[in-house]
Amino acid sequence: MENTVTRQDLDALTTKVDHLTTLVGELVATQRRQSELIQEFTPISREMMDVAIHTFHQAEQQGLFRLAAGLRDITLEIAANYTEGDLAQLQGSVTSILDTVRNLTRPDILEILNEAGDVLHQTDHIQPLGLGGMVKAGADVDVQRGMAVLIEVMRHVGRVAQHLHAGAAPPRRLANPSAPGVTSPPPPRTTRTTPPATAPVEVESGAWTEDSARTLAAAAGIPEMTQAHWKVVHFARQEFNHSGVSPNIRRITQGAEISTRELYTLFPKAPGRTVARIAGIPKPAGCI
Amino acid sequence: MNTRASTFQQEERRVAIICSRGGLDEIFPALILANGARQNGIGACIFFTFYGLDAITEARVDHLHVNMVGNPNSPIPTVLAGLPGMENLAALMMKKMMEKLDLPSVREMLTTLDDAGCDLYACELAMKMFGRTEGDLLPQVRGVITVGDFYDLSEGAQIIFT
Image 1 (cartoon, each protein chain N blue to C red):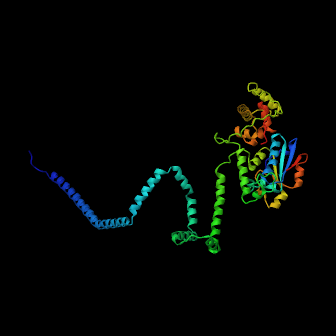
Image 2 (image 1 turned 90 degrees about the vertical axis):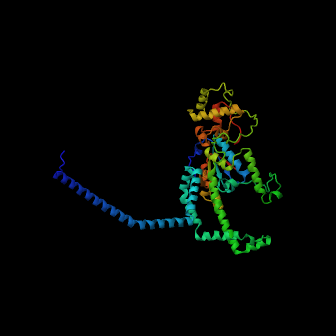
Image 3 (image 1 turned 90 degrees about the horizontal axis):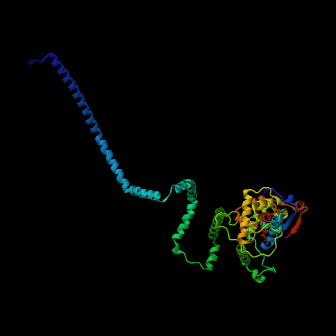
């Protein structure tokens, strides 16, 4: 085996070694830069840690963490008990709520409220007033002024409350009660012996037909019987068969769920009588 | 003011009712005559004058009373009926009885009348006397007219004075 190491081999080796040296040199330089950086940064980061610890400690001293935990609990409670709808409503009224708070916390109003509050604190000083005491107090100008203020407050509250109440529920007895339980029961029927002024066609339900009704309607001046007309006529027949008394206009508006105005439009002249004639029942008696 | 179209002049037979009293028992005859007329296909209008104006005044219509004092038909003797609070008590009892009998209130009757095509008018002189304006009246009232206007519109009609 040849043991000779040629010059080329040595050159190649030298190049490699040079290369390695350069790399090591770069590595060392990088290492040095890094250690410099760490050295510079260490005191800064230590100080940052100090400041952070100090701040958190202060915050805890001030109870902020307890407060945050409390707020978190409150938020959880709100999330558990209120629906989206409630929150949306609150959102909508936030501005007016804030306005009200702003109005109520104006300095002069706050002063009045504080003054009133102070008095309530000192109730042990206040003796019961007899009749004489009341008269004497009534002569005090401040008392009179206070009473005037309270009366104005009552007046304003009463005015608003009236409107609230008016908007709340629809009046009981107008034409269209929808729920069956809402309609007031019909007044007790007294048996009447007045003979019908116009003889009904046939009172037994068997003999009355819709065709005969149409003929009667035409004779009474109603050229065409629409769905609305039939609803009223059917109700009238039903009512007569059920209670033995023909319904008057008021009863028809309640039971057939139609307004008085609509009834007079459908049957222009004397609706109570016309409906009774078409339905083949006696005309309604009664004055209302 | 009410701007509903009026059918009063087109009816063959018409009654023009004057309501001049303001007691609960005095207003009802006018209202029932008008309602009965409409139910029978007779044209009707009501002219509210003097204390009858209370029936069509928003602030008064729910507070009408029956006069118990000096009223020969009153169930309470005058000496008791004059005591404070008795009139309110009597009005309350009457209201309860009307509810029990399912009788409509004056306000309700006026709504029904307007829906049934009865025209309601206020007297101009009475409005001046009581210091009321159109805004004080119920929405069913068609207008404020003088006695001359009333005679014009009731021409050919039967006039009933209550």
